[in-house]
Every structure is written in structure tokens, then in C-alpha cells.
Length: 85
Image (cartoon, rainbow, N blue to C red; front, side):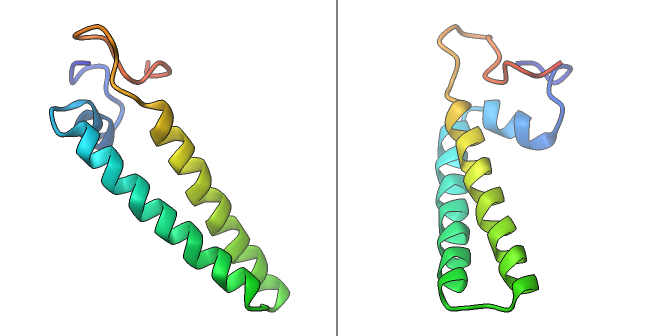
């Protein structure tokens, strides 16, 4: 991927030489965030707080799924971001 096709700085960093390490670090941080939110959900919250924690847990899970799908491209120079315009 070249700089012209990247939509964000994060995409550029994920496509760079340290992309795999960054992807792993972000996945770990998102998993920890999801786990904390789930623990709070299990602790019994008022409805508004429950909805907020539920949204955080779902967002973290979705973000981890996106990162998992961004595996390095098999061909050199190919974009690991298939939806990038």
C-alpha cells in the first residue's frame, strides 16, 4: 500500500514493517477493554450504564475482528486493506 491509498495514519502504520506487532498490541488492548466492560456488565449496573458498557464491549469485539481480518497481504505491494479506496 502506498501513502496515497491509505485513509488513515493507523492504516499506514498497520501496513508498515511493524504492522504485525502493532496489530497484536492493539488486539490485546481491545481484548482487555472488552473483558473489563464484560466484568462491569456482570456486576449489575443501572440501565444506562449497562447500555454504555455493552456498547463498549461490542465495539471492542468488532474492532478486534477488523484487525484479525487485516492479515498481511500475500503479494508484495498488495494492500492489506481490501476496502480502501
